[in-house]
Length: 340
Ligand SMILES: Nc1ncnc2c1ncn2[C@@H]1O[C@H](COP(=O)(O)OP(=O)(O)OP(=O)(O)O)[C@@H](O)[C@H]1O
Ligand SMILES: [Mg+2]
Image (tube, rainbow, N blue to C red; front, top):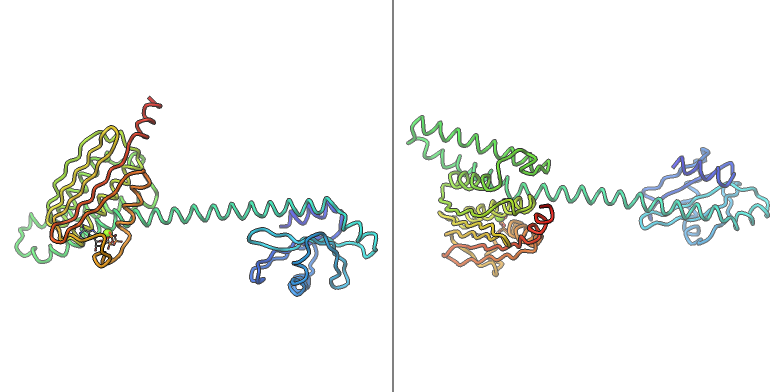
């Protein structure tokens, strides 16, 4: 603001200038002035109902001082820019025809708009990042945590019948699972991809997850993971990982299943994912069946649609639930061919 005042004084060769910015209710108003004219802001607020209607340059007297002014407007801010002028009629008339001042005000308006747009963009980026972290934590980290809690709970009742070696083994497995969850949490927060993070390949990570989750939840997971993961972008791998975690979480938590059958086929032109549980099932068309109305299914559908894929979920009471996903991989193939 100080720089703006200095430029106005320099360009208009006036000895005093001010720049007042406010919002509609003057709750956030700020005056920058080359003098310590503390009354100016109070007068501007008081006179605002008439000032705000001025479209062109105008002249007015506040506290015995004449000012030449122009209202500035951007989508979020309004205000006035003014310079002190002489009280003579010629000086006032000359001001009203002052093209450089009017041009300067226009430039300041553009500059303010630009600053506001940049700050909005920054806020959007922060918001998107917050959503991404929340979604990743929901889909992967919280499912694993749920598994750990479940496992600890069942350990309580079966520990009496376990040998020390078995207890040690279980203890080690749970610590490892907690550590992996911590790593996943860090990856979600810092947006680390598996390669950047020096982690294992995607299919190995997925296999480990399924083995761990089956053990934690005390169920069987039969899986078939086929194809070449080099066909997939890191974003698609992350999306598939999250979908698998959430689907398995739902199958255990809501379906109370004892078995999950999972098939992931990475074909040249498409990726197919089929997850079938033998739980209580539900009818996705009936809102009563969507008991908690969470964000898991919504996230899955949204992730699949980001990759122009198709998503279907079929649940039948007593017959389990099946999720089928198909995602085209042609675009990634094209990319690989171009690079190759
Ligand atoms: N495999 C399944 N077996 C039985 N019911 C299911 C299954 N998957 C989803 N549901 C039903 O669909 C509802 C919505 O699932 P969704 O994953 O969207 O939310 P949630 O799991 O309740 O909450 P969140 O995922 O946000 O923790 C569930 O509350 C449940 O009633
Ligand atoms: Mg869920």
